[in-house]
Length: 238
Image (cartoon, rainbow, N blue to C red; front, side):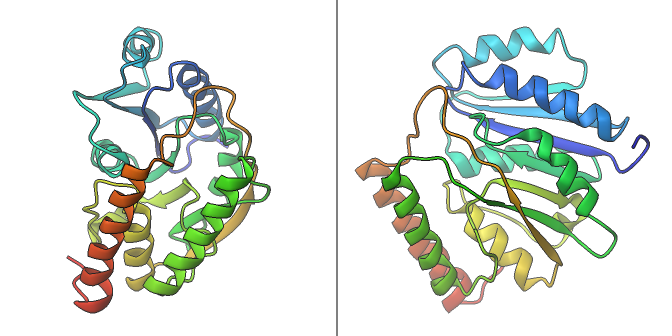
């Protein structure tokens, strides 16, 4: 399995002090089985719970680890943009830093990314979230697929392996969670070839989601409207 395509794996982190260390350890263990040339990046998006201190300690323990610190919370999209910008390898893998995915399944994505495929996208086979989150997620997914004319089965499953050169042709600009809609829409429109595969999804063991607040929901739908106006109405993909 060694000496194959190099990989950057990155994880956005916001107040995941109880999860991020294990995420990094499993990522490094998994990546070392796939290739000799890899890096693991954590984007600390203004955490205030001790995540910064844990990551700073881990920097001295793992030579393949890089940590990007945002001084303040800049948003999920900003964290992803930092991850993509600091990834240097041939392939880029990213997942959320909350430990809800089995990172060992990167093996499956890696093996599926043949010469004819540009991105492998996970699909949560059995989403392990509270009922209201599953329902809201399904409604959101249906909505954005229809409004943005997206073919991908699950837009917001953040378990993806992408060729780095995809970003030579597309740019991503959103600072909020709608970055996933923007990225998938632009990748599909550019004609890149996508493979989808079911992956496991687990309940949160630590912390809680910060998405379902009135303020955040208003921001998301306002950002979706602006993105829809730009991509669908104006056909501006810059």
